[in-house]
Image (cartoon, rainbow, N blue to C red; front, side, top):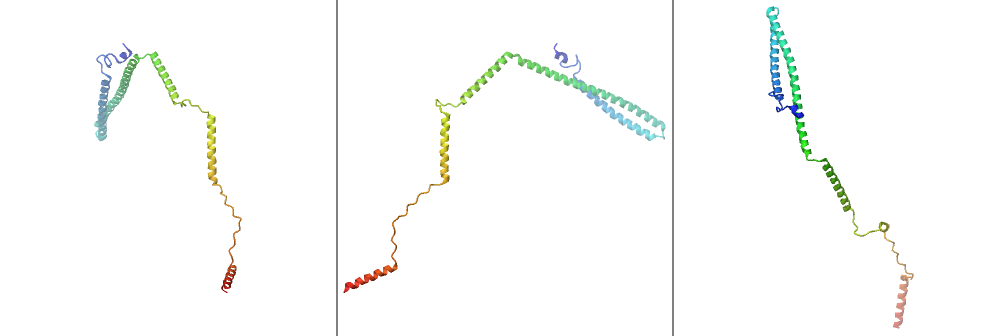
Length: 224
């Protein structure tokens, strides 16, 4: 018989042939606790009643008062016994509940172990290692292909990096010179030279009057 068979028994979880299941025993203990709790309440009420009766009779009827106190003592003794019984039953019920929980846990662990064994039956560690090596090889190959594809292709054209850098610097210098010229403004255009020939001055008013006098004299001479 297997280990789990010894733990759980061949009777499908019963504590023995024809014995109660843990759930049935736990339920019976709970019913007993409920019954004893009701008995406790009853005895507490009886003790209160007997104490009231003893106070009522007092010195008027000592015999009745003493009888009431005796009954009170008996009820208190029964109440103490029930308290002890309840403690024992509660301890037994908790232990049985824990045992039942452990049984269910072990049972489920046994099922899980069987399922894991069944899952591993078709697995060979050598085949697993071989498969993982194939996956690693394929991943490495994929990375190499990706690297090769991502490299720029010149299609046979090769250029000197130094020459390209020199050309780039030359273009940058030309652009810089152009910008400096635009900032300094257009060049100054030279003005034409002043002509050296003297411009005749405008005749004065006196000269005009003399000319008119000479013209009148000439006209008078022509009439004679």
